[in-house]
Image (cartoon, rainbow, N blue to C red; front, side):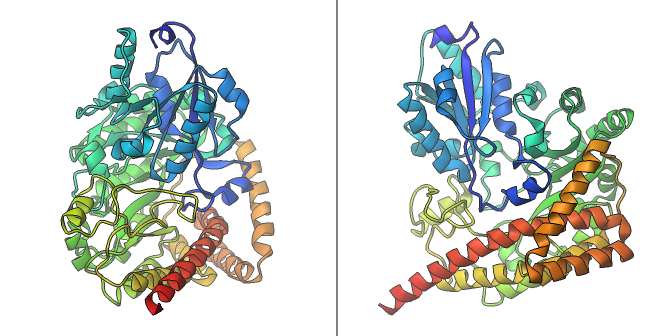
Length: 526
């Protein structure tokens, strides 16, 4: 492979497709504004930045365009990789690349956690690419090669490369991502982030973040930037130094962006930090709530959420202009018959509109998986995603022997989905969120984006008007916000539009759960 290193080698980078029914794949909302997919493939753009810059790159994201034979004919080497929900797609890419007699490099979180699922790849580059990609390239330079490169070392984030943002078309996406830190200080039993990236958060400097924002600015991008960190506030001390410096750059450039991220709920106890985030124009925040039951949280080692009033925390965060989206999980050992009711009430009373409710999955290399294996309760080694109704860990969960009867958990899950994504309940939460928000937006979209937003609003009005029940609840919410909390109307419209996706996704989940429950009832009766 040495002959590839010091010439303009043609490298094709492929982002495999996510299911249309994935929680995060809200393509129906994207279409309203002329986009094709929510998020740009930051991980693969970073890989392009790590590879020899003498190479010639093409990036094909199968979520926005098909992978053509001509792409594979053009390529001399192919890179692919990603997360668990992309597993089947990555495997399909590997097979297709080999049909053209080309070599494929594969990496990312799922190959790192489950390399046995990707044995067909020519090169597995596991762990953090900043560490293992140079190992592979050094071998090639020396005329050697190995099918697998891995290291226990963690990347020095202060030496991270600029992602190759120039490889994508910004108009294809609702937002672009950047990363500030890796790692999380907490110890949740079911989480694989601490296994992949460690419990000591590592962060970039403010200057590095500004360099990435500057690159986006120079390329003409304006609008939504997502900090993809699994817990942005893992190292509060570092973040509090960085945010004011980033704010100064943002102010000097007339706030060309606004932000979203993921953080732990202990953010609510740090008002100075929330003020900094508000000043920088953070608008969306994802929090892993998992369950409102303290006993369940203690059992799964998510003690940082115990004795926290979810309703009060979300109201307080909304007071700093941030809309809270949240993750919930069903299937923990210490749940009871009232767990579903408690979860429904928590979601409804707190006003979490985008509630990602999933079934517990024993992910590879987690404390949960190791415990279940010791107890003899793990159904199989590894988590496989197939095309037969399994789109991610939401629908392929419960890959272990449950404490409660499985049918009871699935019935509760169905009950939660039916309640949370009933149109009245959803739009009631949008109304509550709008009333709790204290909007202080800094970013002002350019005129062309305002026109696009106006066209998108027209498309939304047409889309919601086709369903009588959705139409009634949407317009009731809209006018109550318009005349009661007018500063929140843009946020309310955006959340209202998201129901187009959740209506479809929840319908799929309800059909899937109904089928699985019926199958269990039949087997129990046999």
